[in-house]
Length: 307
Image (cartoon, rainbow, N blue to C red; front, side, top):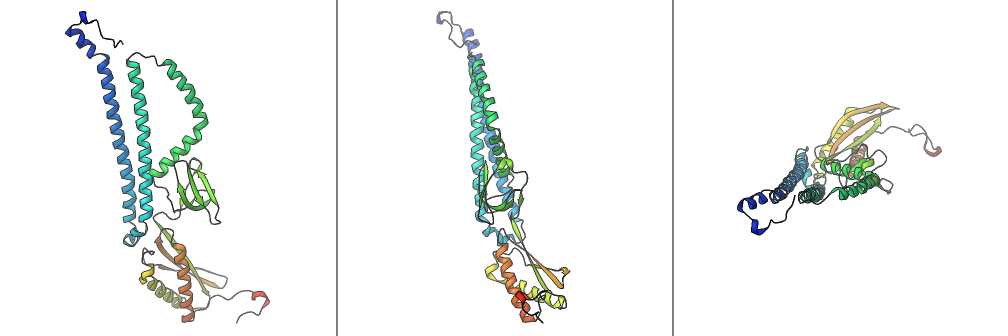
């Protein structure tokens, strides 16, 4: 369509009206639709980001013992909010670029500029780029869904199938882990098939206490319950324990030993220190109560068998 003004000497009000309701009106309509589409998409992204953040906060408040845990997990929640907002800003930039590009191409088509050569060149370049960057796109999309679904975050201990470690950094392309040996692993998000998160929201501390087969089980369980009750009342562990540890009872009987299991819910990634503390306190309490541990089956280093 031609945007050139008609001859002024032959200009009539009817001709001006026909010209205005033609291409210029279509161009204005396309620009307005582009602005509205960008606004709607940005509002949708803001809502998705707010929903992802609120769901995490709601899950934290619903944890058992959440009053104790919220302060301790505040830093991790702040990191999640920052990552989610960063992803939202990135998605806004992408939608602005896409909507703007479509709008510009539509306007160029309306004013009569041929788009065939331009689109052909772009198609060839796009195909070449797609073959070379398909793994990058896969990593990016996996990273986006990982953040939206809050599968894991910095500080979580996760199992990716190939490596188990603590998450040190999360980006849209790679996840950085550090395993128990201190080695740093960089795992591409697109290559992660499954994720096992050992510390999301809260962790579980498991402690197994063996006693000799001929010892009084009820006395041992009663002593252990007194220890864990005192631990729950200890101010030093109030911010770690989400609830009073549960003495589950006898877990197994084998090889002349009776194993008693204790289960405790803790703030994420704090179970290891609690396990060590419980073992130390329970050992001292059982010694005072006269509850004996299982005897060794072989003399230590060639010594005599303990009586």
